[in-house]
Length: 156
Image 1 (cartoon, helix red, strand yellow):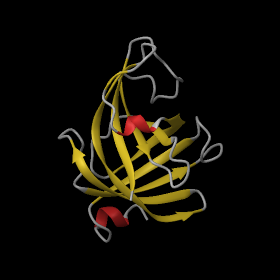
Image 2 (tube, one colour):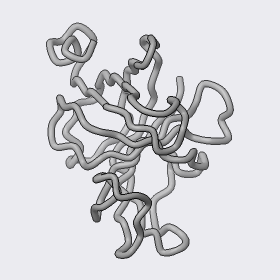
Image 3 (cartoon, helix red, strand yellow):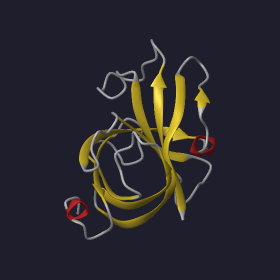
């Protein structure tokens, strides 16, 4: 199984990647996934913090991150702020079609501020640039619960 983590990036004052609505905040969530190939770099997206266990939220593809961020918590270099781990676990591909991917995430660890149960289904849709280009915009659709639940069906 492949690993993932969700980090809370506490952004330092004055650090700004892009004025896209996600990066202009004091806290953003960064979603990091171990890729199927090339385990030297993690697939990474940024979102605003999520407040619901069933949601659709804008995500921006970031440059690949180093694998150390699967477990790292603490200050970041170059005055970028700090990160704390919100959740981690394993994931598996469910489907991949055209411009969307569907994943099943199973949590080994999550903090109480993450509004998910122990398992979620996630659909990732991209709408600009190529799917692996930093800066491409995506939509994450999250459904809580095992496959077959009404929330998970809403993201198919």
